[in-house]
Length: 146
Image (cartoon, one colour):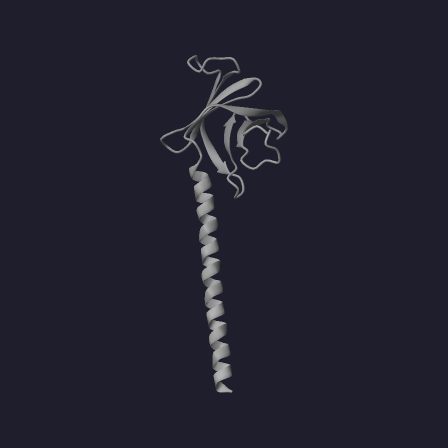
């Protein structure tokens, strides 16, 4: 009888230890996936929408710089808009993220769409919101140069 009780207790301890080890491994794997996805963010990307060509560069201080030209403008010309001190914000755990910039009460976001419901969906999206939070621009964007 004592052997059965001890073997049952021993088995319970082993199962608990195995579960604890498995939970820690899954947690570490989840963290690793998120870190890996964030590490894939390019230091510079150029995208083109129907109306704009946009270049985003990571600055030495870790913030991002937004520069835009008309869609057919040359990158060697002076940008029509420059916004500094943007940030990259992770969006969920699937690798999606967006860059966010503020200028004169408007919020500019360039969304990276890793997870989409369609293979034909653009890899980036430009959205601009006015001071009231109303979306005034929503355009798909395609990579010109990475």
